[in-house]
Structure formats: structure tokens, C-alpha cells
Amino acid sequence: MTAETPSGPSSPSVTQAGDLVRLDFDLWSEMGGKTELLDTTHEEVAQNAKVPPAEGQVWGPRPHQIGGEYFPTGVENSLVGIPVGEEVAREFAPAEAFGERDPKLIELFSMHEVERLPEMRRENAHLDIGTVLTIEGRRGRVISMTAARVRVDFNPPFAGRRIKGTFRVTERIADPVAQIRAILELQYGRSAEFHVEHREKTISLRVPERSKFDIAWMAAKPRVIDRLRTYLHPETIRVVEEYVTPAPEKKPEAAAPKPSVPEQKPAETAAPPTESVPSKPTVTESPSKPSKKATGSSKAAAKAD
Image (cartoon, rainbow, N blue to C red; front, side, top):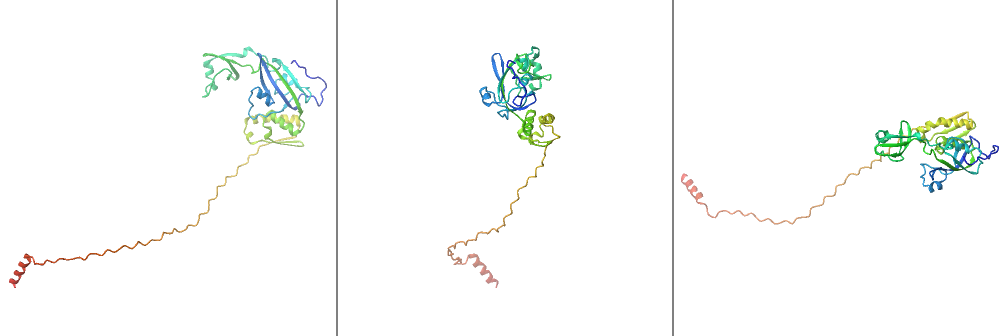
């Protein structure tokens, strides 16, 4: 580390190991003449470096434990003893930051071995320079490849790089509730979603709905409880998870049936009178002369008499 840590006796205006503070910072890596932004609390710096924000990113000073585990050990140690409110610049050799690059951690695999990995059997699998693979429980990045061979680097992503940064402790967190939220943020996140109460020697945490079944919260809970005991020395810590049974949905009431009105048939209309056509008289024509057959029969009847 090229810059010196301010010396002098500890005082409320100088940070000490274990302090919970709010920290503003920009952290960069340098390698091969190229500079890359690793992390920042400033939105403008991220935009200028063309680094997209993480999901749910909140800009501004973050809760931080001096000498904790967020940065590499060398970086954390450099934050001990800096004046509160003063910006300091630091530079770190690879050994003080993410370690030296180890050539032995660069290994060669056949394409056949890589293609059999679970992540390469997925439907959307794609192999390219920079692809992260998990081989025998180790995570590494592809740094070169041919049709038959793949070279994977198992070194930490920023190993072998010099690190530089600017840091400013904006305030020391002293309020108990603010300390509880800082611990939640450091160990789990989503601290704003927790309902927090601190009364004398009792701490109560009400877990938000989406964290109740979150595996990350289940893993972080023991660490949260341990840090709360270390910083606030409570007699009781209550972690409340409420499960409210939803009320059954009310079915909409059926509308009352309307009274039926008897259907009225339309009045029958009288047919218009029809003009009577006088019928012609039926005329029966009687023969004027008796027929010969009739005459002959009458004569026969006379003779018989």
C-alpha cells in the first residue's frame, strides 16, 4: 500500500476496527494499462464507466463494518484510523488486495469434458471467452479455446491486479435501530423491508413476506443474531414471522329476480270487409222432347195394363 494510514491516538473522529459506519467509495482495478471500475456508491461514476446498476441498487453511502469482510483484508485494514468526514486515497499491490496470479490455476480441458458439464447441457448453453464454468467444485473463466481444447483460469477474477480507491466515512452509526438495520444490510440486505424495534434489552425483527421462505435469509439469520449480540448486547432477540390466513373471497350476491309481467298478446284486428259478389242462379235445363227410349217404355207399360 503506497499511501500511509493516518497515525495518532484513537478518538471519536477516527475510525476503529469494528466500527459500524456509512462509507462512500470508488474502487478501481488496474492491469495492462487498463482501468476497470469494481464498485462505487456514486451513480455518476458508474454511468461514466458504463457499468449497469445491480438490481435494486441504492446509491449513496453504504453501511460498512471497519475491518470487516466486504473488501480484501489489506483494503479493510487501511480503513482503520481514517478521520470521519475526510476523503482518503489508497493504492494496493496485488498481494494486499485479491492476491497474486497463480499460473498453476490455469488448466487445459478437452472440449469433450467441457461439453459434458451440466451447465453446457442446457438448451441455451453458449461457450465463449469469459464463460464461467464449474469444474470439480471450482469456478473458473474460459480464457482461450480451440475446436478441441478449452483453457480455464481458476484464479480469483481480480487476482494479479493493482487496486486503487477513494474512501470517505460520512458518519459513525450510533443509533441502536440504525445499527440493527446496518447489520441486516451487511449480512442479508433488504433492511428497509424489516420492521425493527429496540426496547431496553429486547430487539424485535418482523420478517418481510418475501424473505420468509428465502434460503439466503435462512442462511443469514444466525449471522444477524450473532452480530446483534456483539454490538447491542440484548437479553432477548425476537424474530417474528407472521402467517395470516387469507379470508375467503366473498361471492357476489345474486341480483333479486325481477317480477314477471304477463306477456300481453296483441289485440286481434278485424279483417276488412270483403265485397260480396252476387252468385249466378243455377239453371237446370229440362229436355223439351222426351227421348225415344222413354217413349218406348211408356207404350210397353200401357199394353201391359
